[in-house]
Length: 262
Image (cartoon, rainbow, N blue to C red; front, side, top):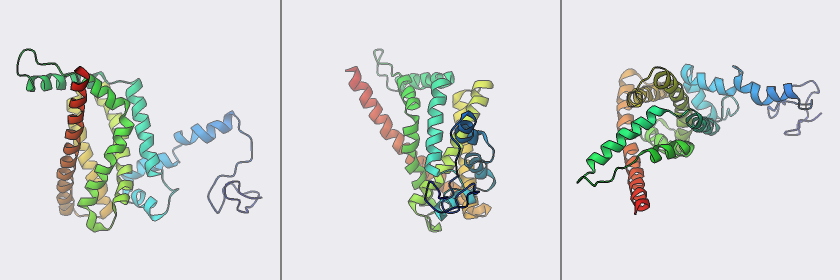
């Protein structure tokens, strides 16, 4: 018999094609088969998703180098990985909205209005539509920020030999893991324990820095001194680029806001 994926001649008792690695499926779809093929793998502990997620803690160097070295099926595809997270995050904020985020946006609105106030008739700038738009289009925002993460690590670690697109792969894995960690921490700390979103944002920023530096340390086998030096450069450069992008987006938002009010 031949493989239905690549037409390679295989043994009739084979479960996987030795040429392309595809699973050999002969039986028709059923309820059990549908569960096993579409739902079961996600909840199975022995699959690419969980292997990738936990691998980014236990052995991140192997995960990061697998895809660029050609081992494309060992771990979750990097760009599918981050798209999966972005999709989960959109549904997360859609069906489980964080009231504290909106309260945080009210605080921003008041501060912006006070700082821009020249008199009693100064308009109040409502940040809620902006925050809601960010949540609704969170997947696009995540993808738009990926080049910034990649550019930052590429500039800091460019002497190590990896090009920009390889750093794009690295950061897809890093930021996806951070994204899932963020969702879990928001539920635990903000929803269950009542932490303010501002405090949570500060805490997660620390988690972001330490986790990113830890992954890059493992990837490049750096000693403590070199790790601290590279980490400081990474933080300064990233927040410089990030601040520049946010200023541009904020400027565009203010222009759109006042144009809609005219």
